[in-house]
Image (cartoon, rainbow, N blue to C red; front, side, top):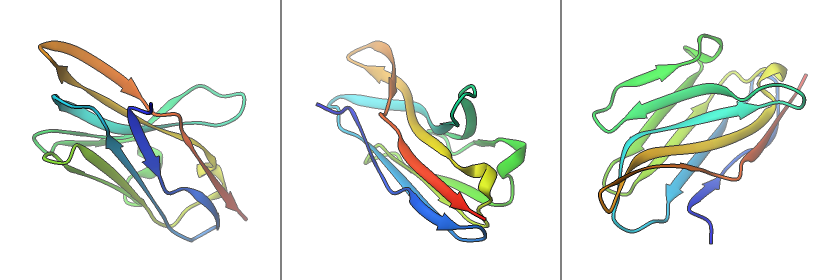
Length: 119
């Protein structure tokens, strides 16, 4: 059973937009930080953007001004609005959730959703 349910992604031409969403399907989970990472073939996994439960955000320099992360604390969901997409944004995007569940710190990953940007 998936713990992080991701949606969105797909193929788009350069300059286009996509929106990714991720929902935590776990009871009794309260997140401290949720975010998105990406991994292109043959490359390491890199941070894209994170958001804390208090609303603080952090972005990779390569996406600043183009991507916006938002979260719904009550629903334990996080979204990533991606505008002005570039071919180099093509990758598998993975949702991450760090928080607490039943008094223990937890770190969860989604299975990833593919984003392909054509030139």
